[in-house]
Image 1 (cartoon, rainbow, N blue to C red):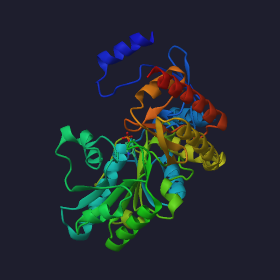
Image 2: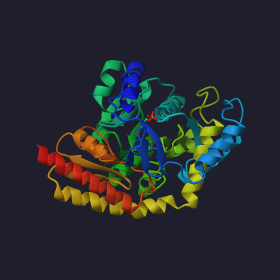
Image 3: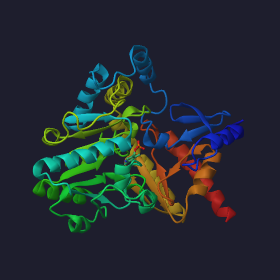
Length: 400
Ligand SMILES: *Cc1c(COP(=O)(O)O)cnc(C)c1O
């Protein structure tokens, strides 16, 4: 049954993904079920999307009610869910202005346009530069791809948007070396996701913030993967007492609903994009923003950040045991419930074996096992994950 469905998929869908050979059918809490009824413990959460797992409390009900009212209005008009969501996301982020998008890449596009317009209003030059980081990931649209620091992703799609320079994450000298009088923005993920779960260091962030302040360069932090509670803070930068000028978010923002946003301070908001400069048909629609609003309510009501802060050290401890025990695993890195196991070699066999045994894991680059579970996981789920991962590692070591 599942095999046949996969064959049909391969007939109809464009071959842009190498997918695992299962068809997922439904989810419940932190568990997933494929169409043949097999159960999996989910440590991927749809790539850090299902922050509250599947069917959390009255999340579904609120969305169903909104479907019965109205799903889409266009941005010619106001709608209450977008107003509510905007107020709430301002409150949790401390940012001043928000623009809702339909995806992460679209939020990144908006951030780039905002930075360019801000700089253009100051000097009307059209050769401003953006500094991004090697090994970064910001999405697959042309602007987002242009600031993505993996040449292989970009190569076939050249030319990119112009005037992007790359520096090394956590190497302040490499950033300084790229700065010119035309630099309008420095952009990075507070914790690199696809690039292998690499947190930006506090001193690096502080120095970048300082450079940006001195030269009126905008700091853009991409919080699409590491934001919305994953590190124990709503946004990962909040841990460091610095603040970006522009921030992007998506993935967990709607808890499963496709929605993103870019946000900015009043300083930027009042001197960048204006009426007619930017738009979207779907963005900020009442269904997506109902999800955003409900997510933030649930985070507050159920103290999700506190739960992450409690659970993450246990996950770290259990993962560190694996680093000690298995030669194959070199180290652990990450922040909160965004963790990577850096391995000595490709991890796809481990992930496939774990999947056979009922554990969903994903990679971040060829040699990093990425753990981005729902934020509601408990210690028992961590233990179960470790048990299956250990079994998989042991078996594969024996087979070699
Ligand atoms: C996933 C991701 C994006 C792109 O988001 P999409 O919704 O896939 O367009 C951008 N930046 C980061 C850090 C991401 O993890």
